[in-house]
Amino acid sequence: MENHSEDPWQRAYDFAVEVARKAGEEIRKAGESEIKVMTKSCIVDLVTKTDERVEKIIIGSLKEKFGEGTHCFIGEESVAKGEPCILTDKPTWIIDPVDGTTNFVHRFPFVAVSIAFAVNKQLEFGVVYSCLEDKMYKARRGRGAFCNDEPIQVSDVKDIHKSIIMSEYGIDRSPDKVNKIFTTMQKILCIPVHGLRGSGTAATNMCLVATGAVEAFFEIGIHCWDIAAGAVIVQEAGGILLDVDGGPFDLMSRRMVCANNYIIAKRIIKEIDVFTARRDGAPIPKQ
Ligand SMILES: Nc1ncnc2c1ncn2[C@@H]1O[C@H](CO)[C@@H](O)[C@H]1OP(=O)(O)O
Ligand SMILES: [Mg+2]
Image (tube, rainbow, N blue to C red; front, side, top):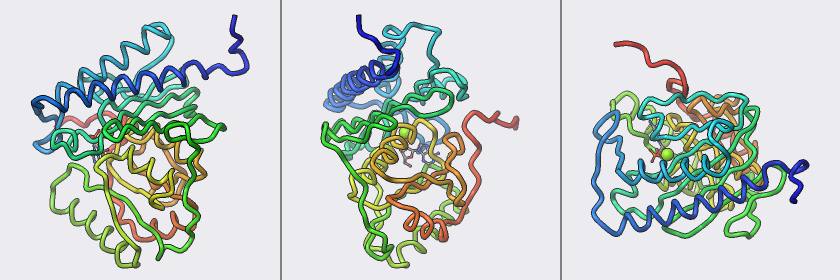
């Protein structure tokens, strides 16, 4: 019999990679036929049957493998349907079945499956499968980060003027919020930096930091399922995570800066116009 006592999560990690691949194949196939689009919180917050179906496949496979009741699950579409979004000390899977749903709907070619696993609120591993590019990013705490089994590393650029920074626009179209986002983007662009990019998926943006293609990614408004897997991948690739105000990273805070090093992170943080986002798991106030 295999002895997992010294390495309790390897089996879960390997299985997460398998499940992410299967989920990505489902997404690729679904993209070949007509995509029926629905909305969630507002008219630009999109969801499809594929998001819901793929989340069910992922959670179903994990429950079958690890036994119902022993593990907890936080999944984007389950939370949208009223399941709690609370991270406890129990072994917890944090899942975004389709990160970049808007891209998926428009067939803009960056769509990722994001699966992370935390125990005692510490992230143990993360898997991001960029399914249209067929890139499997993965990392386990203390064991390095990989893309299609090749080790990956963040860039060694320390000069902000030689960097590419990533961010996103989110889904809030109130002029006040959009203004803050654009002000930040303008300030960063005019530092100046080499470029400002956004792939439309937070998980993929983080993997691009991990491979050294860009130096940093920041966003306010993302959820824990968008960034949990990417957080392990960035850290294991030698990068760092911070709050947008320079404090420690908090997975449930809906705010994050990830970067190749502190010099780049701190320089960006100086330019970020912070706005509030209700924490993941916080009760929604009654109207
Ligand atoms: N309210 C929000 N504000 C900002 N980003 C959000 C957001 N909700 C989801 N995102 C995520 O941030 C990136 C784009 O802004 C995507 O990864 C998107 O994930 P999604 O495609 O799974 O919804
Ligand atoms: Mg997402």
